[in-house]
Length: 98
Image (cartoon, rainbow, N blue to C red; front, top):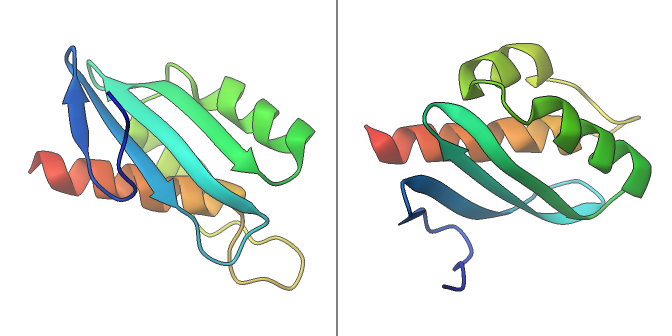
């Protein structure tokens, strides 16, 4: 199944979202949550090493913990960052579950 930008889909018990970022070098984040833990995190674009590191670090964490640690991080003079945009994506997933 192909993900549609901005639409939360459920596949085999995993909530999935292809999130269009705003104000960052990365263009999209593909994120999945299953059993209350981040099960997938892939950045498209951005600083390759940093986004790979973020993705590996958040895998297995609860969305709440990710948001509490990464929310509000800025990149240079930008008012957001790839980690901050990941928080927006996770919030969208959480909002769709409620």
